[in-house]
Length: 137
Image (cartoon, rainbow, N blue to C red; front, side, top):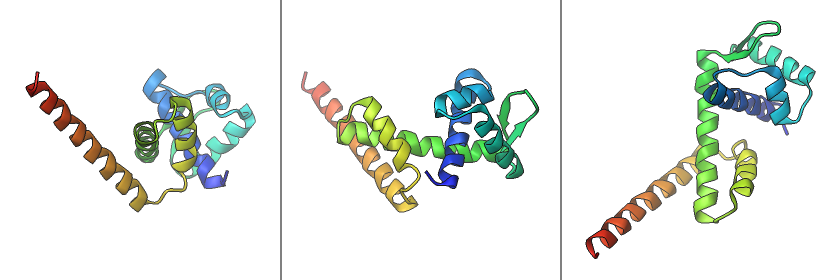
């Protein structure tokens, strides 16, 4: 995993913890990422220098406004790819999640927009089919 990719993973995990628990702690981030607490602390130092997070000694990690914006984009990309893998390839959820996690770092904007367009088109098609079946009852 490249350095940039791992920083994105940290941002996304902090964002997920903030959504779920209202805050992110070093030990929790380390646990879900399978790294040591010192590794998380080192990454947080870099993200603080980049203006992405705020971290007081022994306190929770908090996304800054720019960090939250970046993390939300990463998270939404991850969700979109997962949805695509689940609906088109019918992968099991755990497999779709794992692969989306890898793919989100390498797919360019054009590919993401193509996936988004495909998913929207499929969703409209499903709604139309449901409406059609509802009228035939």
